[in-house]
Image (cartoon, rainbow over all chains, first blue to last red; front, side, top):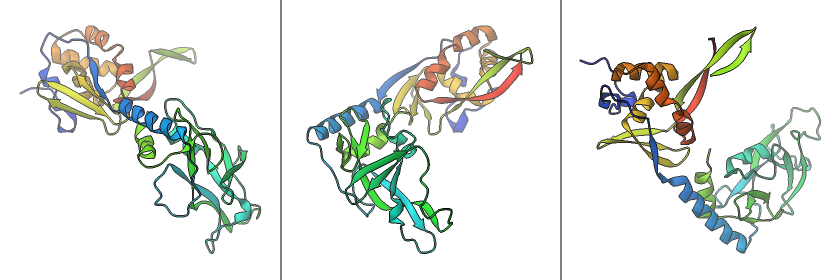
Length: 184
Length: 106
């Protein structure tokens, strides 16, 4: 009988393998860096994409396969209609998930208006958008069924949306790699 | 580690760690291997490091050193010295994250 506790989660116990009278310096050696390979793949794909930059249109269906962002807008809570006069918006903090290797996106913690007709960014502001309808409770800022392509430069930094900014929209496996390759 | 003076009394912040969500540690043959979804890395661990990861639930660094000292019959101080510096390595590898129990009088 031993007083050693079982390993966590039912794993084989390393404690039971310790030799009495011996304790070496704990060591961990990286065998394989999945993130490094992912980063390499990402960089190759976005460099190629930036050699022939592309712009993608605003879409209204959620099934398009490219790196994109779902816009915010003011919605009439009674009937679900969008108050277009108050514009469509990107929220900077939501783009943080795409920051890679210390390369932060262009929007920071700001909000930025987006013109779905011209597919271009508008004014940026530091505060949460408010409806021109005033203090009415009829309108709420919600995600709406408009998706805009995000633009990425050759180093992997988000630099714009729609047809605004440098860089390029990225699609197919390229945007999929972004989700996997972002280090904590 | 000495971190602050509160009401003129020196206090020590106890460093304590937990595994990051999704971390897996498996024994394969005579070795141990850990995978971190945060870093995307797989690491080979020696038995001492694997034992440390097993013991995160017992408490802070001192508590872990105490258990390992009891297991091996070695002085706590020598175990504690061996553990110095491994926390940053484990954290950088995405295997653990720090929690703080708060300050206790030294």
